[in-house]
Amino acid sequence: MIRNPEETIAAIATPKGFGARLIIRISGPETWQAVHRVITICDNDLPVVPAEPVIRAASLRLPQLQGTVPCELYYWPPGRSYTGQAVAEIHMWCCHPLAEAVLTELQVRPAEPGEFTLRAFLSGRLDLTQAEAVLGVIDAVDPEELRHALDQLAGGLGTPLQKLREGLLDLLVELELGFDFVEEDLPFLSRDVLWQRLSQARQSVTEIIERAFKRRTADELPMVVLLGRPNVGKSTLFNALLGGTRAIVSPVPGTTRDYLTAVCEHGGVKFQLVDTAGLWQLVQSVSSQMPMGVESTENAARYHSFQGSNSIVDQAAQAKARALIERADIRLFCVDVSRPLQSDEQTWLEHLDPASIVVLTKIDLEPDEATIRSLPDCLRVSAQTGVGVNELKDLIIARLIEHHQSTADIVTATAVRCRSALLRAHEALTEAEALARSNSPEETIASALRAAIDEFEIILGTVYTEDVLDRIFSRFCIGK
Image (cartoon, rainbow, N blue to C red; front, side):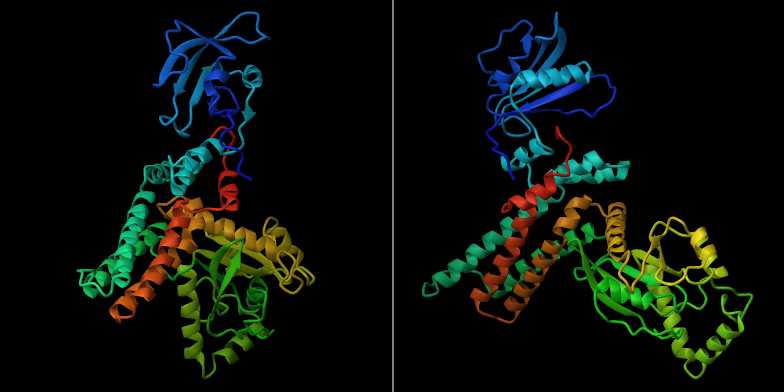
């Protein structure tokens, strides 16, 4: 729930711990009065309420103190501050018990997480992409992430989106004038100009999508690929993650010859889930013609019978599986816990990369104790009973967000929130462009144009719901 923005709020704006100074931030219409409850300004030559920004040496005066404590006061009048309201900061010694006493004496409401930035958004000082960039700055873990967040905060995403929206609004007005005054002999838009402007807008959205999701086209989703040796439970897990039967499941190795793909959604995030053919040879070896891991009589017999007249088909399936594994954003390496680890599985495990998740499958069966002991921290899943499936989905989404954060130049929170809206805007502009090319009625073009504008307004926060704002600003810390 959005709290009343006309209430005056205060919070400690610096993190807990030792430091050179501590900052208390206050915002709201009663800011100046609240400040004067706790400080005395040195050489006070100010008007009753300053109309310009102020920096003054001051001293804290509290009932608990026998004397005074030096501090500094920074004050910004309405319209000149971060929140758009009157804002003050008291810079003082880093002493949290003293700061808590100051907050009590201010006699204003304690701020909630992200409430200062929320007020900046509500007052029009920031759009929603810039507000999310503030969180990106706070959460940045390396210079590259900080650079991307600062660029977005400076309008690197919001400014081009705002220009696009305004351009499309102008185009919509011209279109509507054209069919409102169809009887008048007035020089409105020609079809060629209309098509060109729609094409330019669509291309601009495509470029923004590519920035948000590196090297992806407008209709691509992140790819999560299941991999492992034959008969380790990949297809059963594929069905369990999707919540239905899509892959044929059989105890015979080699049942999946080609790859299967489907869209999976969890926690509001969609990804492309791919089930690949089981790899008879996880780690390729040039010293042996027979793949590693099929040395037993039973496996060798199955392998040779599997080659048969369809060996070319199998080789193609194996090659395609390896290509998909190479392209994957996330790789789910499936290991059957009911049997001992094979030598090539062990080699693969020793060279895991951050994009890989080890999944121990078939935990409903009697486990091989050596396999369990060697992989104690890996996620255990039973596709048959559903145990661990939701936990695996949660982990996939977390890894996808981490992966995006390391490859895209837009703050992760913005990319996750805006992805669907950007794709819908692209789809609407593509439709409008096609309608303009085919000389369709201007009313239908205007309808597609309005749909695209609606998506931009969602991204920028021109229109919003309280639920959306709660989800965004609840992730902030108090004082920001």
